[in-house]
Length: 204
Length: 162
Figure 1 (tube, each protein chain N blue to C red):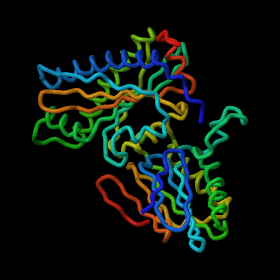
Figure 2: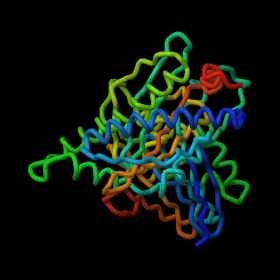
Figure 3: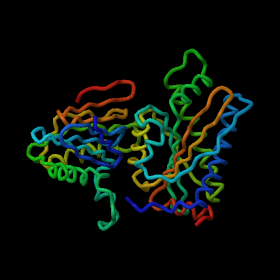
Figure 4: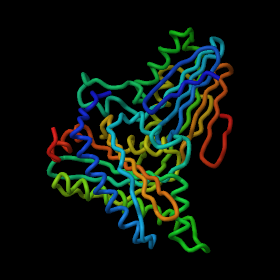
């Protein structure tokens, strides 16, 4: 495994700030979709973690979760990254119940809804990252899987191949009036890109 | 029961009883090796197929358990240290699925992983007794070291013996 990247308090502060911006804009979009007047958010937990430990952070690694990811690239800096939004199965069920009509829904509609919600959330964080680094990122269409958290994370790490051995973990809860939506955003940078990202944000 | 968890890009060996388990194989492949006579088992969770393909320079430090071609020889070696004999070792494999549906890759990462696992086992003269591979779902693999029994569980489909 590569050497653990530096995780200074300054770096964590910067991540917290980015996560605040990301979750704020994601919550605004979700609030509009859910017709909720009041939505509150927790202060996001942030960390830089080795990939091997990630499934444990996503609850019971064997439980099913919804995972939506987008691949994103900034051509000027060769920063390539994956944004993955992981949603607990209870939150998945809640969103389906709230956003789809009670009858005549097909599995295809449910999967499409989840993909869109994931796209909105991952897109919000990507905008926040753009804002913090002052760079624009092109992103791919979102991809979805509902399965064991460990399998989803492992597959993304394998499919994207270039990823580093460490990634950024941003954990947050959005509280609606009826239920908490628990989600985790993972940012998987390509090899060496973690340091580049922090440099662009202006922290050593 | 004494249980050892094998993480992503990790491997472990065990002797005389207990359980080796790896959770959440997607495109990754789980390989359970067993020597019945010595009662020694080994389990690996490989992420990628070929170390040579992904290492920019040969001197680079890397985790051998991450790649099929380097994890399996190491797994066998570690089993031999516990008294296993390579000529008696047999294999069961699971995983290599396409979790995110069909994408443009002609050959998915999962399939490539499986191909390298089979090829490396063949080079080590280790027969593959059973496989539960492919599809579009994740798997958890358990190896019971007292008997060599292997089980596979999937979300919503329960557990079955391999």
